[in-house]
Image 1 (cartoon, rainbow, N blue to C red):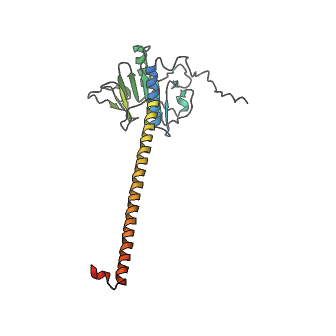
Image 2 (image 1 turned 60 degrees about the horizontal axis):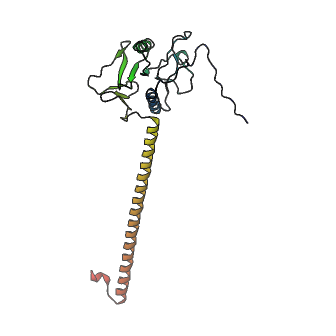
Length: 249
């Protein structure tokens, strides 16, 4: 029996695609997927929406005002299916954090326009990442405007909203709030599998140690019981011979 076809309602007024690829190259795509995957893990089962390459329409009735951040995070919105992010049906919550990953096709004018767009439409934090030169530029909203951050001591920045740390002192890196470096999904899965295998090995070793200690304790108990019975047998023989065992102590 053929399966029921899956259909999605298309919104002609607010398109969900511009026909362009999600990423221009594998390095850009890898960083997008790495950031999306790590943030979704961090906020799993929380009321936080993490998405990538999704059209964001901030103003109802003006579909020409649109952008598609490489990655964005909207606190206070559920992690459910969307064809686009229409802000007026999202409790008018603008994405608070945005990431853009540079590709060779991006122009300086285009990136400047992105900063202006995010500034105008309420983004609280914006991180521009150049994966080729391995550095980032961060912006946070201060006094109502996105203001560029300056890493004066080389330790990077901690995102006020996300708690993650971005560093580009010796190559660009991002760290989780507990200090683990962001990983690709296959790396993270393999790490968890390795941790599970180590835990199982440690558990088996501990079980073997416990069993050995139990056997030793059981053997000691049996020896003590045998010694007690032997002493009682010896004392009984002495009493048969008229000798008080206590007098021999």
